[in-house]
Length: 46
Image (cartoon, rainbow, N blue to C red; front, side, top):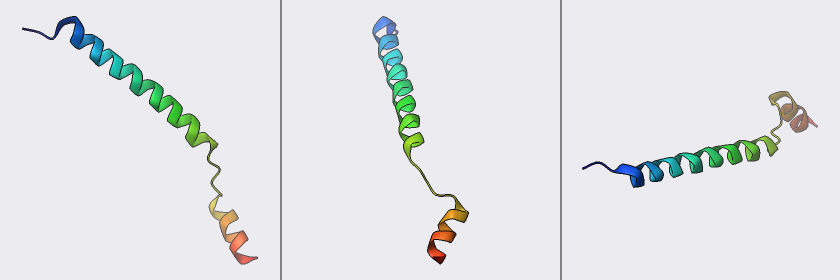
């Protein structure tokens, strides 16, 4: 007995959910502004 259509739909749904989660995560990560190594040293020296 094979999983059939229901198994395929569950796996496909998980794939779509993972795709949108990764897409959203990349958007959120792009918003983070990290200082470069040289800038952090300059600010500590002042």
